[in-house]
Picture 1: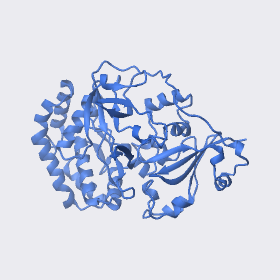
Picture 2 (picture 1 turned 30 degrees about the vertical axis):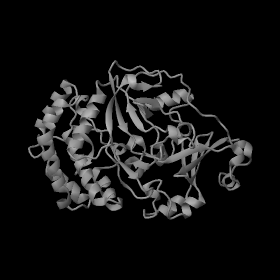
Picture 3 (picture 1 turned 90 degrees about the vertical axis):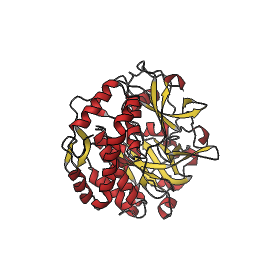
Picture 4 (picture 1 turned 45 degrees about the vertical axis):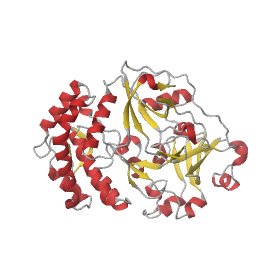
Length: 428
């Protein structure tokens, strides 16, 4: 008998459907009739929005995958060391995405909530759709990670709750208890690269000075962080903290705000985040579907240029997101994960995705942005003044600001050298 565990998926207290994870590794996402029929439904992903081509047909189908979940769900899970940490605590394989998803279902990125259904709560119609022979096929498993972790220290990020100046690992275990949802992401120091929190705080601050929309950020003394798992970390004083923009406080309770990264938007798995799209595609989607299209495409252009000026080679699909503040309409989210990667990668000179068929920031000129704009279907006259403004702000504000920011001296020297190697129209 092929046993199955079933999760109920809700978004803003509305039933989306069910996720069934079979013992043989098959996963099935089934949408509820009420979600499909509701043209005023909250947006799970852009491909399910009523105005998106083929959304009706997509929602009529059962989304079947094996081991991995569908990309809309798979991209909600952590990658790398944090996934290894969770899988170890769950005593499961790192590729068992259903079990990891079930464990994290109470505090996923965005607004989706996944809650295990008990066998006696499975609707008869769902049993028939899954072709379950009897209720004994349905598993009831208590899933919670143990605290017996053992992992080498690399930089990891944790959802944490701030209270009275201290940060505690989010421990909420049910969708009913929203008061304990994490409202900050804390990124610990890395043993692979030195002083990453200081780098990211500096780069994000410079980005803000150039007109990039960022959330609240701060450096947090490691002594202020409680309840971290026993992982080996370097003797650095500070972690990097960024306010979760997918959470908002309403009447003293934390409410979920839905979002999705562009790997979800383009239905790509995390391992495809560098090689399956380009910046023109992202631009076209923003300009066509955003409820704030002109401002968003101008903000996107600013961030593209800022990433080049800051030598950030990691602006891949998962580092751009849409946010649904009204539960339905996509807009570009605040910026995140901006840092100077070139100080850690010898000889790095490429950004993550193609921009007008170019990935080399030392060959990039303003003409590449004009080509990008045209291919994205955006009038160049709407974009150029914003790029000129970025250059002006970077040239006038950044050199002095960098002196007072916490990036270590060695990294500051490398960043200033990067500025001098850029093409004349971008040089600082």
